[in-house]
Image (tube, rainbow, N blue to C red; front, side, top):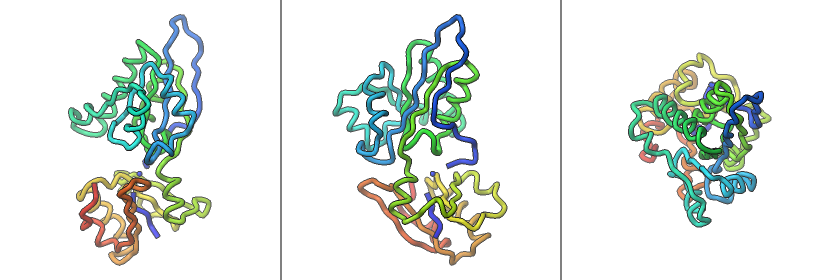
Length: 238
């Protein structure tokens, strides 16, 4: 069974702290937390405490089920969805968004919150870690729950048996996929679904069975077995 649904070949940051050598100028620090894959029940307690104490809480996006919880608890935040409206590509969006976070660090300690886990499939986190190291800004990436933990449970997968997680954009760079479960993420529209279908059918054939996982752990969760040729015909891909 192959699962279609979030990650990248890019090296992602290891959860933990980075404390640069002390300089004359005292730097503000960055903490990066995850909002979990679904409702607030899947956020770690450590992340909740950090967000409650934050004087500057930035959300990569407010399009997430946990935002209602933050509002209910009167946790003040700034959502950065506006960068998606102005950017011409994801690379440009992430670059300008992380530049903004670095600018805010000149004024205050910052907590940056992302959907899922900050250590899984988060290009913004990777860029922030690189920029913090270059600027000598101390940071901490807190562990969190990603969609993968839900996937293991809902699809009956054990990663110990072998698993490859790929961003859909990286699929074309792999000439031969290994004989393990392959999870393909960021299948967010019909065009991407078509590209993924073509890449997979070259290796497995049109009739190969795939598992499509949509909005996992959300109220409208959908898990469906299909044949690969059907992948770009699904009306709910978003």
